Structures are given as C-alpha cells and as structure tokens.
Length: 240
Image (spheres, rainbow, N blue to C red):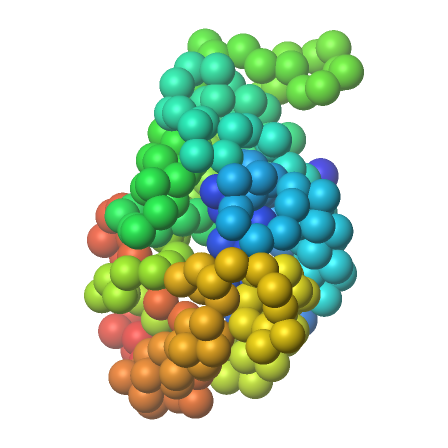
C-alpha cells in the first residue's frame, strides 16, 4: 500500500496529540495517510493495553486514515537496535511514504526520544539496497525505499518549531481524535489515578498551544514540527 504520509508514534495517542490536525487536513485534501504505533502503551497509568487498542481504532476512524497498525514493541523498554530497525524497515518499504512524521527528538517521556531516533535510523537504513527484508508472509525481497522528509512533531516540551502548518478548521477533528482516548485524558468522574496528561489544564493546553502557533503565523491554529535538515523552497514566494 503506497502512502503519502506515514505518522509514527511510540504510544497510541502520540500521533493525535502531536499532529492530529495536520493529518486530518491532509486526509481531507485527498492524501493517503497511515499510522504506526510502536507500542500498545501497556505501561500507562490509566486504562489497559486493550482499552488503548480500542481507543486507537476509534481515533483512526475519526481521522479517516487509510491504515493503522501496532508494532507491539515493549512499552518503556524497546531499544533502537538491529531487531527493531529491521521490523520498522519492513513497514517503511511496504508503505513507501513520501513523508514520515514521528516523535519529538527530545521530550519528557523516554520513549519519545528513543522512538524518534529509531524511526530516523530506520528511514535511512530502509534506503540501503544491501539490507534485505521480506514483509510478513510474502516471499519476494522488498525494494529499498527512503522517505523524502522526516518531520518531528512537538509533544510535552515546548520546543521551538522549524516549521508551522496552518491547521485552521481542523482542530475540532484533532480534539475529537484525542478525546477518543477516554481513559487517558481529563474526566472529572474518573476514579483512575491522576497523571500529567489527565488534568484539564493539559487538555486545554492542546487548544491554546495551537492557537499560539497559529498567532505566530497569522492563522487561527497551527501545529509545529522540527526538522533534521534545512527546509527548502523553490521560491521565496512559497513562504507565508
């Protein structure tokens, strides 16, 4: 399945929180978008791996993505090694995305930085012809594939973005996809333990961060990304 964009997150809900509005906008424009969750979030304080499975499925339907899979790596303990890289390379070569969106390069949760580097390394290695992989039950060796660009969405830490995407008109869809994770976020009637992301302040911050990034670019809402290499344009007139 050929995708235009492949969004990858260490945990279910990472993608929604980091770039849900961008995904909704690209899907609405006709782009084919897929999501890969590296883990099931089984170490999360609230909910279970099973509830996260259901929530991520519901969220994917809300966003309208073409595919969502879970790699079932160990939450908190996956590492950036040959085994994990090869598993991810198989998926990159299967989906052949032009753009990859992934975790913040550095962040509060240790899996975010690890996931970010794992994805970056797998994207590079995926382009090397002498690394041979076979996808699932297929018998033919996959062709090498390297995405054109990797963008890192911003998560807990307020990193300064290198680019901001105008997502005006798509925040409602983003918030709907985020709140599909009912066990994770603010619920005044919940008896679950409190976590850094279960407060009303955190839920509110999703909106006011997007408003602030939008303000900086002269739009209603924005989502920020950092890049690994200099962004390039054909003309100065391509910049807003």
